[in-house]
Image (cartoon, rainbow, N blue to C red; front, side, top):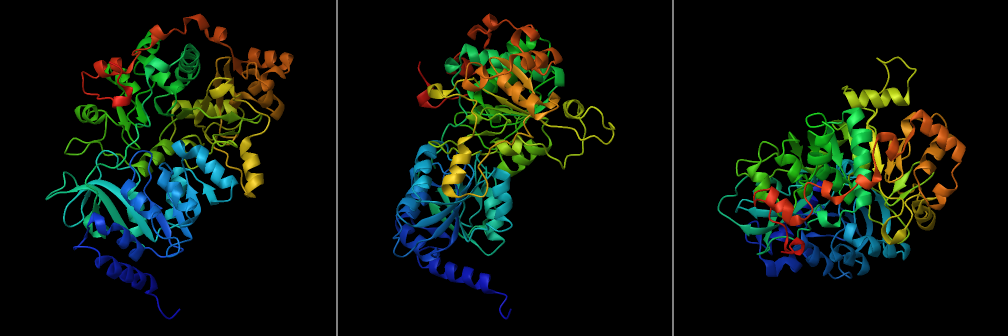
Amino acid sequence: MSNWGMQKAALGERLTAGRRHAKGKIVPLPSLPAFLAAVIRSGDRVCLEGDNQKQADILAAALANLDPAEISDLHMVQSGVVLPAHLDVFEKGIARRLDFSYSGPQSARIARMLFGRKIELGAVHTYLELFARYFIDLTPNVALIAAVSADKDGNLYTGPNTEDTPTVVEATSYKNGLVVAQVTEIVDKVPRVDIPGDLVHFVVEAGRPFYVEPLFTRDPAAITETQILTAMLAIKGIYAPYGVRRLNHGIGFNTAAIELLLPTYGEKLGLKGKVCTHFALNPHPTLIPAIESGWVDQIHCFGSEVGMEDYVAARSDIFFTGPDGSLRSNRAFCQTAGLYACDMFIGSTLQIDLEGHSSTVTTSRIAGFGGAPNMGSDPHGRRHPSEPWLKAGAEADPHSDAALRRGRKLVVQIGETFGERNAPLFVERLDALELARELKLDLAPVMVYSDDVTHIVTEEGIANLLMCRSKDEREQAIRGVAGYTDIGRARDAKLVEQLRQRGVIQRPEDLGIDPLDADRRLLAARSIKDLMLASGGLYRPPSRFRNW
């Protein structure tokens, strides 16, 4: 190869073109459309920061308004497809290919566009998987990111939602890519340097805060008795016997119920200090009563949550904060902690098949996976022992040499047998397989593979899949907690009863739990107002959650 500086030369061309529309590093907002048209090339790989919460929304809107006759065939690589503009770029023909992790609010539209061949899908990744590929073969040519503030040199303060920003910038800037940051304001001195200015090429002052979605807020008023029952089963049937101290919770109402039962039901069971002391977790408001009553020692966060800023700043003994008092989150670091340092992941899903594969991908909704497959996978690279890890490993493989036996992470899928719109949780065949067939994908988008799932919890009880010794036992254990779904009604009653006698299946009564005790009075907070009061007024819920 005669010229080894082609990428640097290409970056130089982008910088020269961009500077025509900038004053130093600062791009005036009216110049943004012309600026983007100047620095982006057709066929570029573009990372548009769409995290769980922190959205580069001004940059997203400007990108979606480019002329497809001038800029087309972009390959979008971004963790979250959250805003309408994130899909508008495909609708208008500006972008062609997509690699992503999570789509939440856009799950229905992205499904329609994929089936309508408007988007060429690379893959639905886990967060860590996508971040890893930024450094291997999905390195962005251009990164469009978001921060709270910048100084004139481009030093960025990301605020509590640092999220993906360090990872995106690191991959892009050190590999001859262009980094453009949207900030709320330009200041003389940033409160904390989260991203150094020499990695940021241009800054756009938006003049308003970027869009933030309160993704992790669950109103206790919406928690049902059934969800309380599943929470009681999880606490007494899994948390207690395994002694789970280091863990990650998913974002559903089932896990919110667990958090709100710790100071009440958990206290009654004598579990304080024995379980739920260390979390990899966004600052869930429903954890406030547990934190305030001394259950939690430490939380490292993927991102923040709207309204939790003052509470987090006042609880620096629990959360990771900077000198300014604001949260320092980091999705890549926290995902890694959840993968290797946590002993358990517990979360919900939309579908579980007879082998135990689970997915949030259906024919009508493609929500993506986010971090669940990182949290909910058994890390074969792990080497440090812990009580839950060793116990789970012994249940899965009781006959091997203990000193050579792999431990197991507890990966728990929790939910009700019938979910939203009465859709059954348990199915013969995942919709993800239909998507793979329709789109001719080599790999079906499965969220958590069956060999990683250790327990399934429903209102019917707990199925401990670690203790199953055959494919048939595993299937019947799943059918045994599937209730009155078609899957549940087709169980082999005799074999299910045998599994119950062995402790593979545990019904509420086997654990000494009366379903009638699953009462909302058990919740440490029964409303958003209760959470606010528990925080001493430090938690300031978003207006949509205020009903007082």
